[in-house]
Amino acid sequence: MHISVLLNDFSGTGVPRVTLRLVEGLIARGHEVEVLVLNPKGPMRNQVPTSAKVEELNVSRAITAVPKIIKYLKNSKPDAIIAAEDQLGIVAAFSCLVSRSNAKILVTSHVPYSKTSLSKGVKGKIFVSALKLLWRRIDIFTTVSAGLADDMAAETGIPREEIKVLHNAVIQEENIARNPNRDLHPFFSSGDKVLLAMGSLHRRKGFHDLVEAMRLLKDKASLRLIILGEGRERASLQQQIDDAGLKDRVDLAGYSDDPFGYLQTADLFVLPSYFEGLPTVLIEALCCGCPIVASDCVAGPREILSDGHFGLLTPVGAPQALSDGISEMLSKEHNEASLFSRARSFTADAIVVRVESLLEEKAMKR
Image (tube, rainbow, N blue to C red; front, side):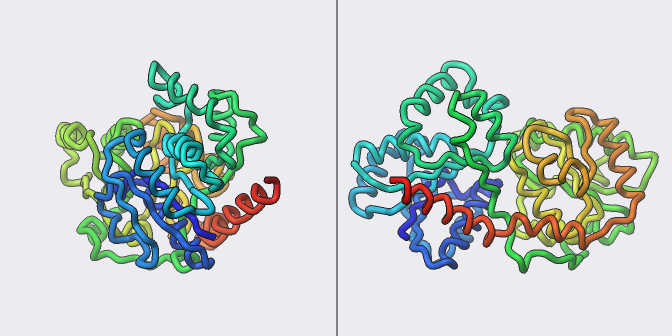
C-alpha cells in the first residue's frame, strides 16, 4: 500500500517521535511510505527511515499547505493518508475533496479537546465547525487513548462509536531492556537516587510542581532530578530552581536523542502533567523497567498504568502529594519483568497491524 504520512515538523516532541516509529513499522511491513512535513526543521529529521521519501512543504501553518498537498495528491496518488494531528486531518480531508483523491484518511488525535484551544474561543469554534463539515470525508478517526475518545465525542458531537482507539507506536521489542549507563550524566554517578522527567518545557507539563516537590524533599532524602526537554518555560523553571537552592540537584539537561539510555539508568520516572493524550514517556519508562510516579490526569496515565497497577498515580497539581508519592516509590522493590510485560502492549509491530486492520476494514466497506 502507498501511504502518505502528514506531519507538522521534526521537533523532538512526542508526536513526531511516535509517528516516525510508525513510519518505520509500516516500511518493515512492506508498505511504500512518504512523509509530508510542513516544517522540515528539527532534531528528529535524521531519524526518518532512509527508505521513506520526504516531501518538504515548507509552510508555517497547516492551512497554507493546502495548495501543495492538492498538487501532491494529484501527482502521487497515495492509497491512504495518515494525519498525525487533528488540524492536519482537516487539511487532508479538504485537499482530498478538491483534488478528488480517493485516498483513505486516518486521523490520530493526541490531546484532549476539553483541555486545549481545539474547542475553545473563536479559533476553536472554527476548528470544530470545519471538523463537523469534513468529518464524513475522514474515513477513520482515532485517538491514542479511550479517555481521549470519550473527550472528543463529548466536545465535537462525533458519535463515540465512530472514534477508534489507536495507541502510539512507541517502542520496538529490542528496546525492552534495563541496561544502566552512568556515563550519560554526572548525577548518575553521584551516589544519590536520580529522578527523571522529560517533555516540552510548557506549563501543562507540570514541571514547576515537580521542582516544588523536590524542594519539599530537599531535607528528607538525597535526590537528584534530571529534566530532559526544551520549551518556553526554561527561564522560569531555572529561576524557580535557583530560588529553591536546588541548582546542584536539579538539571534542565535539554533535548536528548537517547531517552532510553536515561530511562534505563534512572531510579524513578516522574510525569507531573496537567493533561496528556497517551504519554509516550510512560510507555518508554515501562519498557526500560523504570518505576513510575504519574499525575492522574486526562488522559492516558491511568490507562497505561492499569489504574495504578504498574505505577503510582497522584492528584494533578499537588506538589505535596507528588513528593509523598516519590518517597513511597523509592522505598519499594519493583518487578522489572512486570513492567516489561505491560510495555509489550505498545510495540510498533502491534500498532502497525492495528493500522493495517483499520484501513483494510474501511476499504471493505467502500
